[in-house]
Image (cartoon, rainbow, N blue to C red):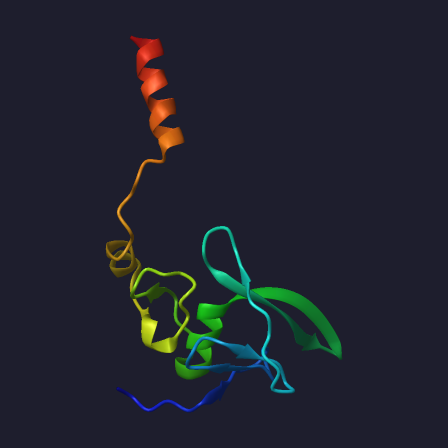
Length: 126
């Protein structure tokens, strides 16, 4: 196991925010920022970033991307190793190619509603 710092600073334009290895984001005062769990399972945080000339802009960012960025820098695609999109611990994240990311997806499951719709289409068209 690699020894990581307790808190890692995010680079510009996300300064002075910080992330910890447990997947938490902190504001410039060291206060934990509330995460919002989206319907798709990913966690996001609302942030205010400096866009220059003293102007600030409110944005929403994926927590897993911010955690990875703070500890390792930018990455095109990230994978949640255990497939839990809300588990943003650094040990559960890895940088991957798009094809590698597709291999770790949960198997596709038909919902009862989709299964019923598909069954009805076959019945009507026969």
